[in-house]
Length: 496
Image (tube, rainbow, N blue to C red; front, side, top):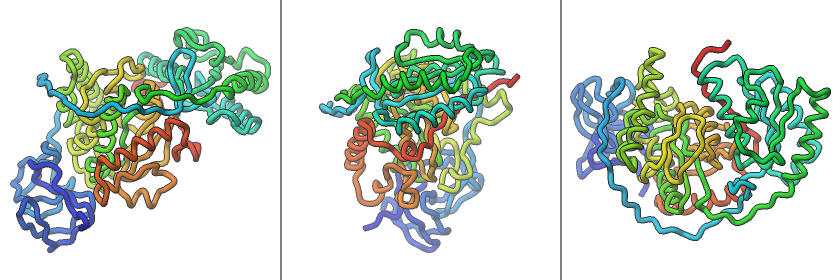
């Protein structure tokens, strides 16, 4: 029998429509017959009791806001009848949650590239990275010429990554640009990198070279365009040398424990917290049980569910770091005169998400139930295996770039509305509903919508693990096939 609605948690006072429901239709929740007052779109909430003005609306077992008016049982409740409970900075108390996950370790491998420094990549690409936006045209021409000359034979891709920054920035903005570019240059998915500078920019190539620390000088080369005659000819000469080295690299068996994945959602809908995000949570716990690593970011989309993460911190020091992670981002919002709770986009609301708490409680399910092992500031790189939290905003491209930059081999991106973009690592799109997967096969790589149709979550996760291993071993996802590859760097201050 087709499932048409679901009550997610026993304490909820709303249910979610799996498929559209009609006014006058009868639904049965906890043995109680409820006649619908309104039409309920798929993914949206229906009240299962009468609610008074000011009463908390509960979904996933937690309040997601309060009713703005009296609401009758069987009514459609959207952003028009509900308001967030979120306010400004809060004081938090550490109440550690005991985590017990009985997940066996399996002898699983993927085919990856072992790098000279002991790191591992899931791609062997040649990247051309500008130190400053002034040379964006140069790096684009170099990438196009090398692709045409070699047809990418022996490497997975040849890509230039233009950006707007590297000059006219001050303070943290300048440091953020340096950190993200450093992290890209050192990323193991690149078999070779040409860094192209101008020569007079704030991000001076010689200083940036020192900022890299130890690096493989056979695979990472620099060119300063103001110091050479013909930058195109000189660049191609260096790239041919790099290409001849990178094309000899071969995939080898690598244990799954070496895999690092970023967890991201965008264009979320009412199914995100029921299908795709819990699927990622199940996978994240599985990967961590194998010794691997997952990273959750989008700090503003933790607001309203942050205490769940705080109480899963392995120790009080990590708890304090998580409190700072949350309150620093709230302070950032407040310093610009913006409220902390006005996050859901028009697409979120159309898909059934009414408040930031509702969005956060769905969003944080992507990281499963494992202990939090590490906290990373923006632009920093992974230091510990297991579940990490990373400081970055919710913006899809900025957050995905940050996940890739911290060392993730791929970004797992759940979506209910759909999006085509990708960052500089494979950006896998997991749909929350089957209609999206059917309508956008050129965007969606894996359909989690079957979880509310005909497949158990555990069976879907088993297929998902198999697919992840294929992608880590070289199977391209849609953003790679279409060459949708971009970067975006977080900016806060003035531009000179």
